[in-house]
Length: 115
Image 1: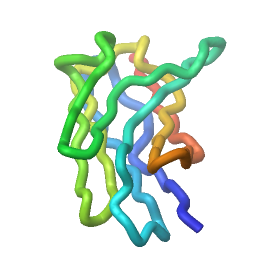
Image 2: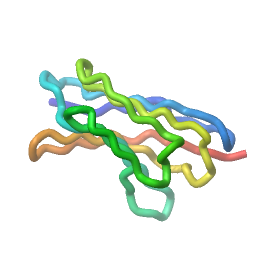
Image 3: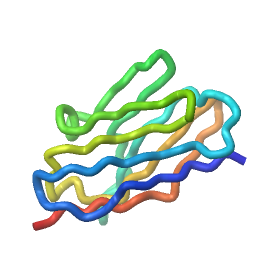
């Protein structure tokens, strides 16, 4: 059974940085696409970054230039380096993995940006 396990969330002041990690434990194959979503209180979950086969990387406009997604395909691990964090980045951050018709979600890791 493949599970996504996230880590790295926490509290930081505006302008600070955090690095999120997500590992697909139990996967014995290279997952096609992995990415990150977030859900702020009272809002819908939104996609923010993804990396697919062939190293195709895309970002939502809201994080472009501040967040960097990277992936270690050999370990089915995806990272999200978040710099210049803003209070509006406060949310529960979810890892997502897609392979064929299968889709997995992590349990979420909280990020709070506040002074």
